[in-house]
Image 1 (cartoon, rainbow, N blue to C red):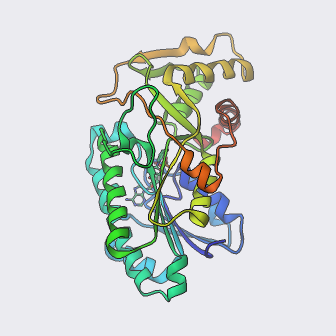
Image 2: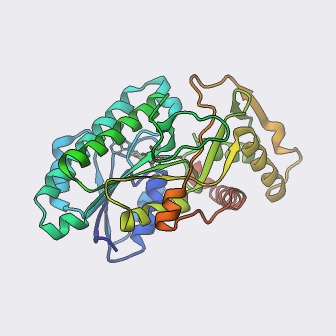
Image 3: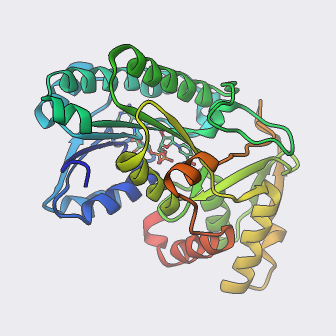
Length: 336
Ligand code: NAD
């Protein structure tokens, strides 16, 4: 692959964990996971990672700049996949401060650590090195029907979470323009799949169905999201690291645009088929007061990554949901 020494930040989170599993399969990769192990971290998977000879765990908060500089210098990775971030919009509304610290200051510290090491590399290593920054479509704000976000869309973040991610994207772009560091940014839509922390819509809906508890749905459920199966996202990230153009952003969508009420109804119907009980699962849906500043619609145009690199999602929304539901049904120990 690109370089055997790979740093993943946030490798104990949902998407980072899927990336770790993929990278660890290749024994020639040495994979270093820098994660502070916060409330959303997957300690169950961590135990399994730690059994692998090519896994190295670094329990560190990206806020600790001095330690981070030293660690990156010692590892001297060829590539960093930067996923560590506070990621739940509701938490950012309740208390934005940790989002500013982790997502903005943390990214700044990581960029500085990467830069300091990269500048001291021999020319060929410098050329092959990459800083892959994992961002979100939420940096673009909300979009009206029939339009789609692409790489040229104006940044218009509307929650403390999306503002912190937008700020980190701008830092990454500036570090490329000013210092020449080889960055690539992915702006992807909502991910879903196995191992996702139950605070997010899809796992929460599935788990509440399993436990026959109310399924809370914001407002009237008309908000539209584009859903990307996490394994498809990992394919895109690996492709970007290998073949993406340095200095550029790529929008990565799942071709799975749907209203929140519809995706919850879909999950309920699939649950009726896969795990029938004496009620219809959709009777558990309860509308609750809307989230402040709730973006109406996100929609991603993935044409650039399709045309330039040939990536497109392999999973349809229904295939992905079936796989995800079956995983939660068979892994109650994990989420409990
Ligand atoms: P997650 O919340 O499941 O995991 C994040 C991980 O980062 C956790 O293990 C946490 O401990 C770690 N972390 C957070 N702050 C840290 C810090 N200061 N220092 C060290 N570790 C820290 O998140 P996720 O859903 O896997 O998202 C990963 C990345 O992808 C994030 O950057 C997020 O903004 C982005 N993203 C996620 C989605 C999605 O739908 N989940 C969509 C678009 C973009």
